[in-house]
Length: 60
Figure 1 (tube, rainbow, N blue to C red):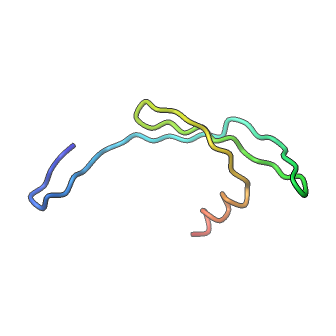
Figure 2: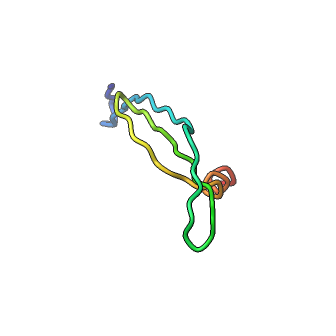
């Protein structure tokens, strides 16, 4: 952590994400979700995301 003369705070974090698996889910129709494992400063969790969510992020 470092402080500047402008009273701002800089925090450096190491964040990594990797797709570890995929699953087929079915609600009104079948679709694939990807299991994404996220690691940030010693903590780890997972989220599920659909392809169209990755595509929308890429398009931004």
